[in-house]
Image 1 (cartoon, rainbow, N blue to C red):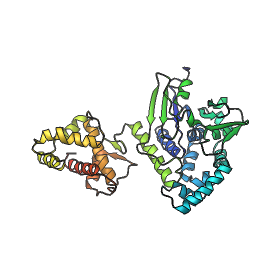
Image 2: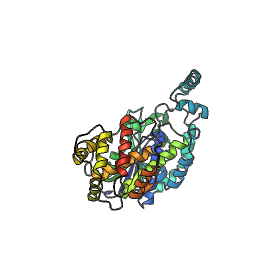
Image 3: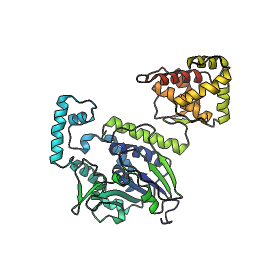
Image 4: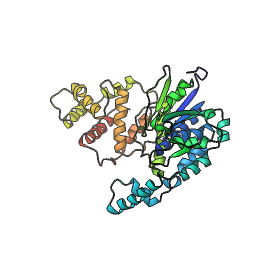
Length: 394
């Protein structure tokens, strides 16, 4: 590892097909915060997004994702795409997909000509090479049975598009050939190339995860400062190139990054606690009336215990367990997580920044909406959250 790039900010983008929309939301938040990247390394869709960002065309790439759908990428009809995305297939659908599969086998994989044209539209090799941003990608040579981690200066002149296709040659797609050698998706070697950046001396790395299919390698270099931005909720499938799923992934990426950049509270919501201290939260919980605690205890099947003992021995452990919080969770985290559970059940938009008091008031006053599919413990948690939040002194 060299030391020339120590202190510079680098970006590692994990592969994941349609999940790559998440990258663009994250980078938007960083750009708005005035932070740009000195180096970008990506695998598969991470390489494609990374090349667009590195050459200075983030806005173009962002707008491209906003307009993207499956037919833009694959030689497939809307009906075929709907059939592929359906979880339950009737006989007619299975026959149709069987015929399509036979064509894919005959063509040795899904046609990638549309994908190639899109990359040609988005990527300008001369601009990418001239840009001050270091750019690298990962692919695997099937012919040589070896991974390749290539920075732009290591890619032969005129072959950047070929190697981007090679990095994104997901199994099931037509194989990419370069100089008669076969290549496959770089995710089979390293789906989030943190080590590649560290090897070139970058020590401050933002790693954007998608949890797409692929190998996540152990970090080999000490002394790195890695900021990991990962989805707060499951993203759509790797082939979910539908506008609704893409917009959701982009929004989630933006607010997940914003939460980290601004030090906001919350797991799936972004909450500005505006100077709220742990001591103040302790006082909020201590101010809960004994009658309220006894009623909560009865709801949870506990009685005959003094109110304060009931709170510490029964209510907090029971609710913390339902929320999968550790025993030593802070009061701030406990209250915010409790509010998040209820906010989600009441259908409150996750993609906004809320001030803590206003957010809690809106939760208390809103009706339950998203309760279908909730189990008994989750419904119990929602009821307890409602009673606690409406009783604390904001």
